[in-house]
Image (tube, rainbow, N blue to C red; front, side, top):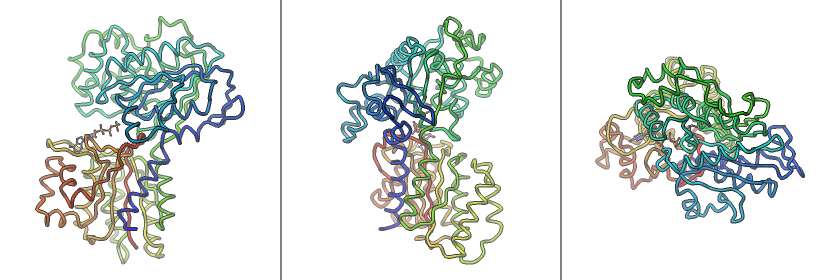
Length: 492
Ligand SMILES: Nc1ncnc2c1ncn2[C@@H]1O[C@H](COP(=O)(O)OP(=O)(O)OP(=O)(O)O)[C@@H](O)[C@H]1O
Ligand SMILES: O=C(O)[C@H](O)CO
């Protein structure tokens, strides 16, 4: 098997491990008339209700219904526009609901933006939750993209007004933490609102994480995690992105009365004892399984971190340096380790993880353990300066290819893969790309000026034209999303 194929196999194992049906099946244990989740037992008496929102939720719901059977009374899920047809076309029928399902599917949020359909879904979900009693159990399925699929602006804010604020923030470069802090302050359901509406029912949330560090209050803006709105925090975010003077009166009115969003609701506000939040899939889980597959393929696996972030330039430098460190025939120059450690804070990786990884790479090199597979994950960022077509994974792969060359590694030496686990890198059909130190010369021989493509953020066009698109990673629709996976294969 060529190294490229092995790369693809390891990436496939990462994605397989976090399939929506797999993660739900592993997290719910059915025992006669009860289910066990995260070590807690819940009795089923035809009292189970289900809601969900997110890109991977259809497959999660199909599996949950299969497990709980006719104990499921009723469900409503909010999923991306066109997903049922797409899954059918891709032969993924196992991720679709059965014809006699008790779950209502509402498709919405075209282009990942909240719309009237998603708002209707949010309204139905709120209604279902509000009708529950202390005898009921509400299973909440959550995955990335959930914020856009559950819009419930606090009156008098309109959907359009809320959309304007969040789009301006996203366009100005706000992080997902900043964006979701604002979303929580303007929503009836986010920041614990859903759990509040479901009180006094028992709420169990199964969460597939698409945020670094798996913060349950941030993923899909935490509808089952009670979060206070801190006015200073909200205002400082709006000020940072120069939005304070652009706010509509309705938004100002709501922000003037933080934490009053559930006042009219007669239910008690302390729901904490009634909520169980469980993260059932994450980048860390994907990396662990990728490591197991790498071992089966004969590599020594080492997982660096599931929290890689920061600019793709710094991230590519890190991987270039680690490849150089692991490939040295003699003792690597000490300045490599120093630069790696210096980069740590910029790329979201702890010194401890960098040291541990370099120790394994060093042992692999000195003790002849054979080829090594370094794995990491997260979500780096690209500063968009051009108008080309691409994504952060393809751009990272290009930059790592250049780093490997500039650090003197041979064209057929270490191989690097970067791929989005959702199968889609930015607005392109590829998930990412595979490169090595030979990238620059290969492109030059084919008349492609790699620097020009980089300046224009045109990584997809570059890889599509290079060698007939052979270096592109195109797994198609994966039905899941736990951010990106990075992989460096270092030959012995
Ligand atoms: N031409 C480009 N070159 C490089 N990166 C790009 C380009 N166009 C968009 N991007 C990046 O792609 C990302 C947006 O794409 P996408 O919608 O897939 O994001 P995402 O974070 O993966 O979304 P999701 O959470 O739904 O998976 C942003 O990080 C953006 O900077
Ligand atoms: O839906 C969202 O808020 C993002 O995907 C992060 O979870």
